[in-house]
Length: 528
Ligand code: XMP
Image (cartoon, rainbow, N blue to C red; front, side, top):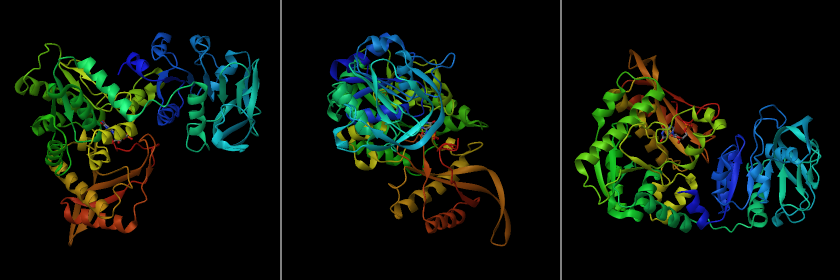
């Protein structure tokens, strides 16, 4: 969706990202208030940010000190616009510095939960009633020593005489704490108060609006050209396909590629569900050999992703050439992908590059630079919860909408070391046992993602009376809201015992099962 289209149809807020680990959460909270917003790297050209026609700005936190040489600064157009501004943490210090206040290191650093005392101000939501203290999340080493002219303090804590401030005439507000994190009491309501009552945004980012705008935008981009949608059976590609089908009907052909890297029974199930639930054309291709050949001898995770991304595109190009009658349009064909907003945020902007390097998610970073297709990414500005909501609104079944995510490179990134057919079959069997036992225990919805991983080590064991030298399966089960941080699921020990017993008994070549008890960070959810 282009910014200009969105700006014409809905009220919006621009968030400038100064590199805080919580920046994305600000965007999620504003969207949850049904107000459209976008997160821009702080040094995005003014013209691009203003194309959104924002009704206000939010300045995120960040890891720097505003007075450090070379630190990100407040771009001039923000205050020059006269629009409301809310500075959060680093954003607050930027406002103070830009308007003549003084920011200095604090002798009393505040990290974590902190009590603040409030004084009346329009930014505090009416829901607070007569509440005068709030428990909030702080994370700062600098503080405001001297208020800029025209500002008054509206909250204080033990370590910060100015834990929040506002301008007495202009719509400028700032918070030293993070309203976007769940640990801050009434944090979401404070952000909602800013966007509704200070920026005067209407809650117009509703599922109906999202669908309507996406369809308009897809039609504008596609015109009369042919679209291919790579369908994985997961929620993102299914919702993307459903939207594109609504928008351009038979110009869309969905292609399901059996890479050989899928879970037990998955290819048959995905094709059957699609044929039952969605009216679009579907071509199913078995490309197992192509993918296995590409992965031969490869052990590096990023190289696996790159080769898989490349093969996907080649398969789509072949299907297009051999099996699809072109639509009337003669232009370049489009390839539709279910890329989500967090993928886009994590892979752009100078201060985001460190995050992007952790892993190349193939639907963003693993595509070859030379390809016949233009990309169509109708979910590019949406968060997962928004995708689920519009998926349900489009009539897709709950079982599909709530399916655990499965990575594009499939089991290839869950087989550590070389991917071979034998190892794939072993992992498929172990994973099927895990899924069956979780379902049986009624715990599928209680975990956000649960899967088996095949490790590249062999360990000694006894099978019958014989010495065995077999492979190890790790079980990974996590709880998370947003997949950016995660905790390991506290699965009942009798379930773990059953899993271990069944996997070692039923999967040939496995003589040890371990349970992964690491959070993200420091680990990631997948092992590769
Ligand atoms: P990590 O492992 O980065 O995973 O904590 C976060 C979420 O992303 C999924 N994931 C991927 N999805 N292509 C995808 O489409 C990939 O290469 C990829 N790697 C990780 C992972 O399953 C989890 O849901």
